[in-house]
Amino acid sequence: MARVPKKWLVGVIGLIIVTLAVGLVVKKKQDLAGLAKPDIRPTSVQVSKSYSGSVPVMVHYLGKADSMVTADISARITSNILAIHLREGDMVKAGQLMAELDDATLSNKVRAAGADQRASASTLAATESAYNTQKASFDRDEYLYQNKAISQETYEHAKSALDLAESQVKTARERVALLAQNREAAATEQSYTRLVAPFDGIVVKRSAEPGDLAVPGKPLLTLQGINQGYKVIVQIPQEQTLNITTGTQALISDGKEKLEAVVSKVYPALAANSLTSVEIRLDNMPFQLPPGSTLGVDFILKNVQGIIVPITAVVKNASGAFVIRITDGTAHPVVVTILGENDQQAVVSGIDAGAKVAVGQESQLLKLMEGVPVMVAADRSEQQ
Image (cartoon, rainbow, N blue to C red; front, side, top):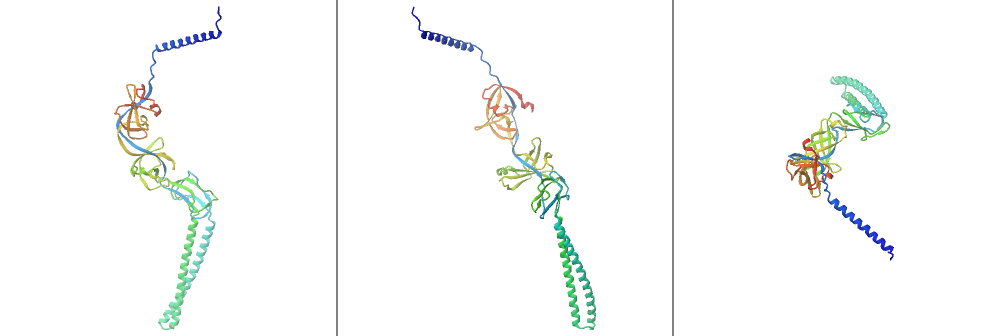
């Protein structure tokens, strides 16, 4: 019997193995085709019902709250600082001593002016005494002259002496007045070494320490008034001044609470950053925050009428905006036009009142394509 080549035998065995594998794959596909297809699991969504109404359209900015009265306390003279009695957060009353400067030089100046004034007063007393003596002598000579007991020359000599004495008194009095003014000026300058609070307030900044040199115009302390009203300053783009004017309604917020207010003033000049400053005046510091706090301010520009949906129901893209209307357990994207919006609601056209729309994060809503089955997990319109 002829011997079968080994190479041929290996090939036959390999063919048999491949044939069996193909058969198994075909049978597996037939078995799987006979099974029932699994149902697509519905996506869980939250919905809210649209309704007809009006929504305030607002723009949001940040504002800074401050006292209506703020003052930098600085020296009016150049002198070394001896003491500063206050620090940030300290309350002060009007007239309270805040800082003291070295007054040694000014004190000497006051004493010298006082000594000059006293010497001048003594001179004045002497000239007045001399005048009185000369006046009595003149009165006697005048009587004698009228009775022709002395010559006219003697009389005129007496008159000249009296005029000279009167002139000396006048000069002495003027000098006394001048030296009194000098002493008063020196005393006033000395008083500048004691810096007192101009009003009731709170210290918000300390800019110097004892030993520093105080110079005019350089603040030592910054004081903000209390119980004198407060203001919130908001800087807005120049173009918004067409919409935000005196009387515009505003909502001030600290992130938790909101306070209604109105715009009191729009500053006529632009700030250094080319923004317009808007001032809102308040009787009390909002939310009992410290001066200088940053607050959120929403300006109400107008009220828009239409179909209202939550802002979290609107998806925006390059081509426009749409909402996901939920009908009979399926999702249906609907193109809408946004007529106005704020941070919570949007006014749209393109759907009717009473439609249920999906709400949630934009990434979740983008998954709800046409016909996708959904299951309502919560109806937010019923919870409101």
